[in-house]
Amino acid sequence: MSRSKEYTFSKPNADSITLVAGLGVEGDAHQGETVKHRSRMARDPSQPNLRQVHLIHAELHDELRAAGFTVEPGQIGENVTTRGIDLLALPTGTRLFLGEEAVVEVTGLRNPCLQLDHFQRGLQKAVLDRDEEGNLVRKAGIMSIVLTGGVVRPGDTIRVELPAEPHSALQPV
Image: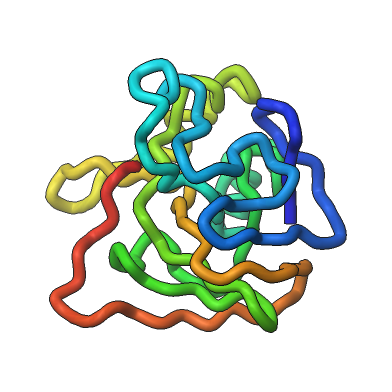
């Protein structure tokens, strides 16, 4: 669990985070009904905030460490680090039940930005890949909105509820 009151790339770990319905992570710079990502605010600050909670799969950290990077939870901007859930394969609209109360809805993929290379040289390229058809694969996690607030702690269970079919593949938000 990670959050930062300031616009920092890395987010310090916390014993817990509190998710607030319709807003995001309490005490995080990206909390709000409207977009809080700086480049998006410059374009249109009235856009809805589809990036309230950023989730990354710990398996990405493992992959990056195997490639020679030093990456720990929270260091590449995520609020929640998961293990054992194929986040990137989830369809848009999937609901994740975090801990006892919190529910988030998956809105899309994080689009890896140049800040990754400012953190560690070559990291942006390392979180991009190509599938068998040559399509770009963004591996830097997923974004979500908070439907039901609650406290989330490391080790809490996560239950996945897929939306009704037909499913829509995640796109960058």
